[in-house]
Length: 532
Picture 1 (tube, helix red, strand yellow):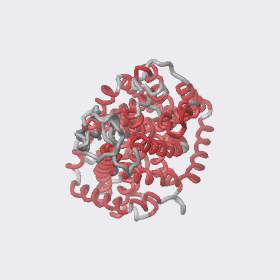
Picture 2 (picture 1 turned 90 degrees about the vertical axis):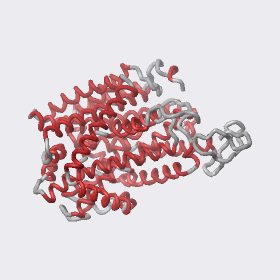
Picture 3 (picture 1 turned 120 degrees about the vertical axis):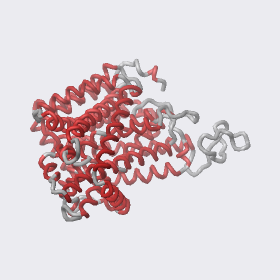
């Protein structure tokens, strides 16, 4: 759909209903924070006890599906017209994927998760503090931040990219359901899907904002000695909300693009600093061994659940992480679709699954591995610091390297930039979802969703801090598992109806006869005048 038909249309029921639901949650948190916290706690226990298995099974199914799509005939199809080419250069595209999607987690968990698993190995599979625990710590960090996250993002991005750029539909999740719901996708059923998408997206991203505020708060305390606590965190959220709202209002090609590129540069400098001034040989060896164990035990690790206990541990790590990715699915999918026009399905899947996963594996190995090596061989207690205050992990590690104040400042800058780039991408997507799929939402809409996101982050920080953020991510994501299944079914129907069966030869663009496949980009025909 041409954006000129959508950008000036008045907002509709999706906008007002989403705004009302979000406002009610804010009012609930202000009026009865204890009741809100206890309700969320009961909900998370029920969801994880009864449906935790779904969070384990779905990513594996999606991984198999995406590999099949990439390797098969459908992999040649472009997200757009056959002659469309990418809008962004590849390195800019990758920077936007990694930084605008889930960057703040690299700072919040890059050291905290590996060192926590090293001190208390998952499922008691190793003795704490041993070499086996070190490998296991990174293996399970890879599990939470690698393919399991990116398959969820990729399926949404792929389905939405195909729908928006090739089928010329609006950028709405409900539009994906037209093969299943028909005209009802534009009626109340479709509106309900879009409203729930906004709700899940809002709370998934609010979790990231809260984590970012906690990290920046601790970093400012290390650098400047400022007091920590909810007051400081609220001030941080307010200031950053203003910044990311203005950045989002400037559009994808300016604010989001430039902050993502700066993020990648600062992160690369910090990464190389620790890699080459730290125990380089140890870190490379630990990365390779952990990657090998992650690969060899992938299926077993992916399906290991709380059948014999460990429910609390699963809620704090695996279920929380997977639920976080599910709640981010539509947001990331819309954003990936927006920046991926002209990419082939094969290229999209290969890059979105492969490059961010490997980059995150390397990040966790260098920073988490450095903390592990320091505790094992140099008498530090970074694990103890992390257990006492999870946001101290990164700073405690950098304190053992040269120029600790300089690197701590870089971490704070990185956290702020990740905070802004992720949040302004979220604000842009919320604006898009609530304005009939417009790719250029009006500035007042963007500013309003920026303010709502900040308000929700403040409410959750005041009511329960990190625990409240984790609970909200899990509870808000649970019903969205059904939406993901619906997206998969509808996307496959779309492909089969438009492109033909997966095992059929491609059709001629002019006469619909089956012809022999040609290499990507080859429009020369097959000798019979058929264009492929």
